[in-house]
Length: 407
Image 1 (cartoon, one colour):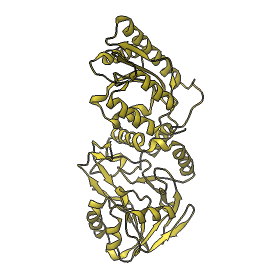
Image 2: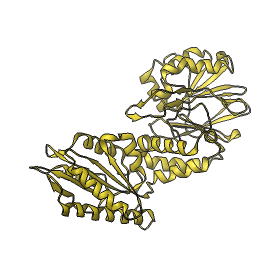
Image 3: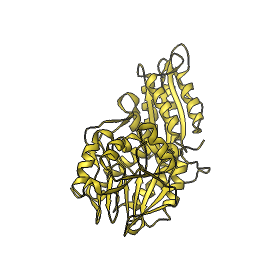
Image 4: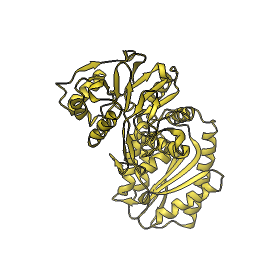
C-alpha cells in the first residue's frame, strides 16, 4: 500500500472494512478513519481515529518514527470517529502537545479527561512552524460540527480537509487515481447528501475560502486522498451546495395494498415519456441513505403514501423526517396517495413538502381505496408535468435559487 502523500508525509490511518452503519448512515462500502504523520524538525500527527483503532494507529506511527518523537497532535474535529481514540493516543505520545481550536478543546473535554494534556489553542490565520514546513489553520464551523477546522501545509500545497470532500469508502488504495473515479464520486455524493447537506451555506463560504489557497492535494478524514481529480470534486461540491439540479424526476412512495403503488407507477410512466431520467423508489426496498442521495440533485419529486391513522405510513414518515432535517432545496414536487374512509396521507406529504419550501405544483392526487382509470390518467399527466418542470429547472430558466439548508 502506498501511504506517502509527500516526502515524510504519510497516511497512518485505519480501514474499517466491515462497518455498515454510521449513526444511521448505510456504509455499504465500509469506511476509513484517516490520520496523517508529518516528519520535519518537529513531528505532527494530523488527527486520531475511532477508539477501537487507536492501537493500530500507534502501530502505524511506530513504523515511521518512535512515539516519543511526536511533538504535536492536531485535532481538526472532536467527533468520536476521529477523536474517539485521542485519550489512548495522548497517553502513548509522552512529548506531544494537542493543537486544536478553543471550541474543539471544549468538545474534547466533554468526551475525555483532558486535564493532564498539554494543549496549544489555535484560530483561523494562526501558524505552527515544523521546520521546512508550517501548518496553517482555518476554522470551518458547522462543516459539519461547530469546532471543525482545516489544516493547510502551504509548502506542500496540501489541505487536510477534515470531513469535507470525504467518502465512506474502504479501500486498500489511498488515492483517487488508484480506484474507479465513478465509485469515489458516488460515495462522496452520498457522504455530502447525508451529512453535509444541511450546512450548505457554510460549505459555500468554505469553498470560497479554500479557492484562495494553492492546493495540489486534498486529504480528507474519510476515504481516499484527492490528487488527480481535485477539480471534479470541488465542482461537485459547488453544485451540491447550491442544489443545482439535474433533469431528474424521483417518484418515492410507500403503499399498503398497492393502490398508492399503482399511482406511483403511473406517475413514473408519465415522466419516462418525456425524455428525462425518472426513478421509481419503493421506500420499503430502499434506505434513508439512498433516498437522500437521490434527492440531492433531483429537480422534481413526487412523494406518495397510503393513509394510516389519518397520516402517512410509518416508513414514509421516517423519510420525510429525515429529509426535513437535511433541508434539500430547489425542488419542484407533488404529493399523492390512496385513502379509505378518511384522508390524511397525501395531505401530510403535501404539508411537509411546503414546510421544506419546495415548489408544490398542484394539490395532492388522491384515490379512494383503488385508483380509477381516470386517476391513473391524472397521475400520468402529473408525471409528464414533472418531467417538463425538471427540464426547465435544470436548464437554468428557474430563478430564485436557494442553497440547500437555507431556512
